[in-house]
Image (tube, rainbow, N blue to C red; front, top):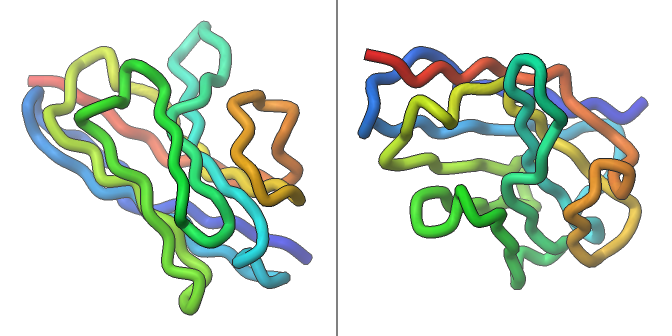
Length: 124
């Protein structure tokens, strides 16, 4: 059974940093793209960042560009999202997702497996 488990969320002040991790199990993820999405209360679940199976290519939504960095370690079946210069509008539940294709998708429907989410709150 495929499992994705996020960790690293929490409360941080504006301008601070957090590092989210996603641990994958149940199959080898090294051939497949993965991504981070987020969902704020009352809003849609939006794409944040994605990475190809070999980690050679990444993609970011505009709000994440220049502040967030996605990476993966296929030997450990893990993916991370380093978030810097956090803003109150970054507050959301962050989800790890995996798909069964090599290239990145920005669409929620493009992913087959999801974690349970981790809360990120940016507030003073």
